[in-house]
Length: 106
Image (cartoon, rainbow, N blue to C red; front, side):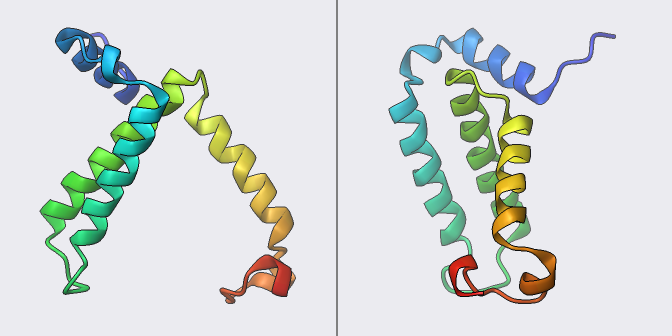
């Protein structure tokens, strides 16, 4: 059996429907923001959001993020690891542990 990654599955679905023509970086960034708003809406009136609805909206956000990374030729895993390295530098464990203070105020 041929194993596909999530990104492969997304690419196949988009190709089957000829949707890549609509997936400019600008449109994908807008879609991420829109879907993130819909995810936030799940928690608008109650912290105990419907898990199925949250799951669906989170999947939409992640899908558009993966599509944007692909469109820009970026490896999602690598850009996350790079950002974690920057964040670790800004928030050393000895000063940031258990605190939500912004790095410039630690």
